[in-house]
Image (tube, rainbow, N blue to C red; front, side, top):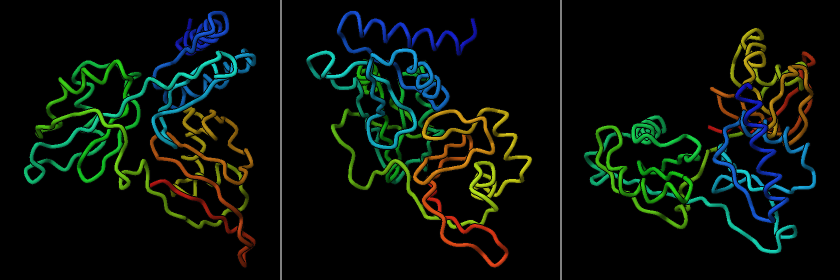
Length: 252
């Protein structure tokens, strides 16, 4: 059985358990491909409601909760905690990035499915994780790169900590075909853009999209693994050469 088939089977088992036992069931943190597979699998259990959440709005890695208050008769929060990892002495700390933090976590032997998105703000890392993993990280994550850090569980992030900054970008395209938009937004050749579809790296609103000629609709979020994501906002007129002027909100 392929890895995808095993994962879909696991989702179906969780749905059946939630429906039969009237107990919420949770997945680990899912990446974009896994989330897409979950959404495909959900068509086979329309009788079981679900919610996707990663700790805050717009998280890329999300956990699925199967069940609802209406179905179960009670509410159960997502088992997600946020760990604040702060250098002991900022003036001597490395300039930390996402890869540094993830590398430190993986060196502890934790499973990737227990770790959600990682947010960096003022050289402090905020790490979403499962509640079962939180205590371990607080006690064991003591260094990121060459920088000693101290960790604690926090209830909320500072207002300055945003998951991704966004900027409006205006591009000209012949049409709002998905491959054309990706090519312009990320400055890729048509061939390179098409290769992303072949490699299954393009997602629309969390669902894998293999149709490069798909016509993008307003407010749809396009995720391209290895490049980032953007939201298609609107078309704004036509250039003198007949190209469409469109605006996207690019996550930077």
